[in-house]
Image (cartoon, rainbow, N blue to C red; front, side, top):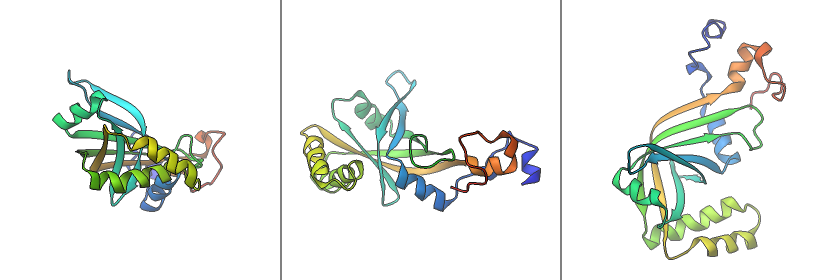
Length: 175
């Protein structure tokens, strides 16, 4: 790591490993979904997500303009950060994905309960109420199939330069 510390522009060696990636999925329920708007500009919104079967699952109302735009151009990106989660050291993941917009009952019937339970963990009554709210006539589910990943784990970077470690980051932490 000593050679890496000389070149702070190259952060490849500070990537998030599989174990830390799964811990981030377990700790965080929000991501930023980015798509191309009708005029071609990138547009993003912070939304809830679940990660199942190696894919990301999000939901929205058919009335949201992003639904039609994603149908027209299924190339999307999501960014997930540890900010606001139980993970102390800063971590992030970005995925380029291909999106599929589902409206079929079979997909809704398995994704929406998973989604509601993930958003209201350990609260079956609240999850059931949230599910009832989600399962609306205009509901769609986005299935995001990842095809490129970029991860970052600040604990690895701070280990190479303790002097630059933020004061809210535990020394020597390997979260």
